[in-house]
Amino acid sequence: MTLVAAVLVSFAALLVAGGEACNNVPSMTSYDACLKLSNTTERWHALCRETLLNAPATAELTVYALVATRLARQRYRNAVAEMDQMLGTGKLPAGEKAAVDHCKAKYGEAGRLMAGVADQLFARDFSRVRQEYIDAQVAVGSCQDGLWAYRGLPVVAMVTADYDLTMVSYLLGALIVGR
Image (cartoon, rainbow, N blue to C red; front, side, top):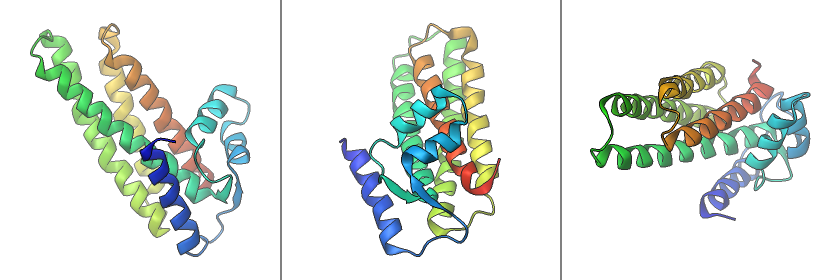
């Protein structure tokens, strides 16, 4: 288990052990949460299972949403560091540089939104969670769209994976707050 995963699982366990259950938020196995999330799509089910691999086997849905949200935030930080490296070389053509700069800004926005989601999940205040998940998805999607013309860049696969993780985070949250 990676250090990040260990910290996330420990944090999630603290949330469950240290606090009261959220009103009207069910507990279930991570497998069942992923089944509910994905309906009939095997791809989303598999990605959800991978995302929750180190999460508690049975927990309140809030824990699973928090684990996925925290993983997404960590991935955003890693992506920004990689983008900084790409930009730091000074070797990107103007169009590619503009696309990566745009992504960096959008990842910053998505990171701030997911931080808000995590804070709200922890506080059990779901009033803005749904919209902030959607806004984070739109931000990462905007980055992905901006890279369309530059599919040869090494950052494209990372952004695609991050978009998918953002969607899994949103879909886990949607089990609590609705779509």
